[in-house]
Image (cartoon, rainbow over all chains, first blue to last red; front, side, top):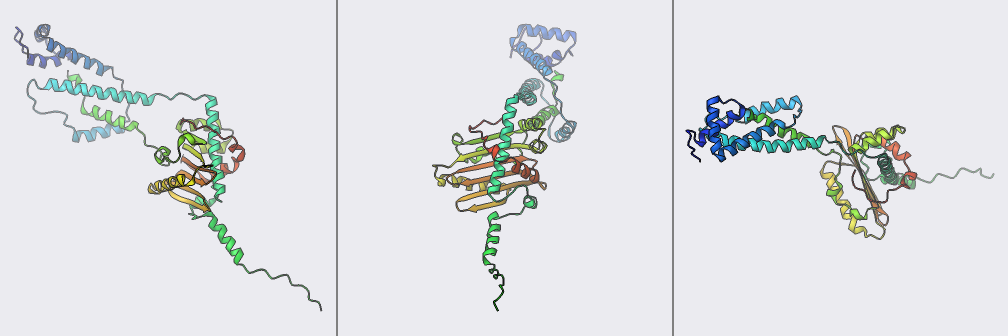
Amino acid sequence: MNRIDDDLTCYDALELIEPFVDGDLEGAEAARLRSHLAGCHACAAELALAERIQRELRALPQLDCPPEIVERVRREGAQVLPFRSPVRPRGAGLPFRIAAAAALLALALWGGALFIRSQQRPRQPSAAEVARATQEARYALAYLGKVSRQASFDVRDDVLARRVVLPAAQSVSHTIGLSLDAAPEKPAPARDEQH
Amino acid sequence: MRKLKIPGTALALFIAASAGLAQPPPPGLVPFDDLNLFPRDKLSVEVNLEGGMLHLIAAAAKSDPDFSALVGGLQAIHVQVFPLKGVKAESIKPKIDHAVRWLEERGWKANVRVREQDQETFIYMKEQNGKIVGLTVLTFQPGEEAAVINIAGRIDPAQLGRLGQTLDLPQLEKVPTKGKKPH
């Protein structure tokens, strides 16, 4: 804590930095603060930091968010987030606010980067790459058809639509096979008996 | 610095917006990497097509309306074929069984299970709200090959079947022989 030969302590100066940056400080008070800042590197550094944060926050891109999300966040945030502390000791607010603003800035930069990255279009594939991918897709579907046929199962048929669980497609053929095996032999066509 | 007092709303907004950017994977997608079925460096065929590339394929194949419509509704096509010639079947069979368990534990329903001698083929489907959103085929033919095929997205079985019939062996002769990175 510095004590300069003006009548402003560092506590007082830090309290005045916020309205000073916002342009809300009256002439005489602004002059006192300037005088203090001229002789106090610590407070001057705080001012520089505050100005930088304000500048960078204002430079952040404006993000569009669906109105329903905004409304929902407002509604839920109002119940959860203590936006204002009713009592705050004099002088304790600024460092907290600067730290909070810095954290918010970091978070905003991260969120902005994430958003911008998501907006970036992927590289457009060339016609040759699309042609090759088309061939791969056709191959994949052909392979699927081949495997399905090997499994005695046509994906096309209404079997899929009915979602019949076949313990084995072969069980059908087995059943048919068994029934054929079990079927009594047809009697030989009657022959005309010789008289 | 009153203008610096960004309300908590904005903070929460950022978090909500950021969270909204992360999209969940398609419900019918099977993460082959998690299943760790076959060693990727030994695959004879690997196809990985997702999202935007499938839309481009659909757009480029307008002359084949069935194929274009089917592919346009898909979110992912993945194929891995692993040759089993000279490979002990015992080393792969447990992995197929593991994949079957993995699918069943996650709500996939077996439509077909074929066990014929040593060969096995499983066809699994995933449904969501009464619609098919995923199709996975596992096949295991000792001495020949093992394969897994996963198709995620809007699947019309009839359409898929028609294409499976028309895209036949001539297509299979154009087999991509090298493993490829996902697009």
